[in-house]
Length: 306
Image: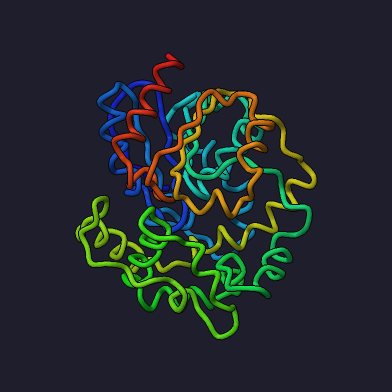
């Protein structure tokens, strides 16, 4: 497992999503270090310089929780505050229950805690894909998205970063049918760089890493949905009682995709929820799009724990 660390003090572990890297926390690492924390950004399983098993079953919840526990053990840490975004947030929501005693608090970005689907996720995705293109369904097909995205890492990364940002309405891609379309066929063309929150050099870093590794590791997190669903049938979610700070952008499409009741569901299942922040104009990549605001919110929340 590859990690990037800055600072000393209480540990804060940062867990990215798709398509991310430890580099996705480049704005948070120095801010946390300056505030007196040991900031630890992880290349999650399947990404960057961390091992990337090819079997989606290796990305089930037991395995990804074991990664985080193993990381704490390897660094000699009893516990940490965990920060999650996207798939990282989905994992981090489960850590207090699956790794009891190792989690001081959570800072969660973008993804509210919602109950598991009533049916197998792949079946739900297939049903939705009958009506419109759905990346959640498209990504389930072994090798297909891997080849498409891997053939044009720069094109994919620039388009998906733009499409999910506050500058675009991601749900417009649902106007496209599934039949005959890949992801690059439905994603919008991205405007030229630099953007206010992403430079050419920053995009180059992502392109270099994903050109080297490909996208199969990241896509395996999508392909593990059914495995995690089955795990949770045997181990139902419990309330999250550790202190939690939730941050999202008001233009993040996840809020629409998770349903109108998602915030209400989170409040009901997270009695430890201490703060909610909605940042105007920000989309899905809130830690990059509104870095200064996210840093200030995080540091203020962490101070309440000390």
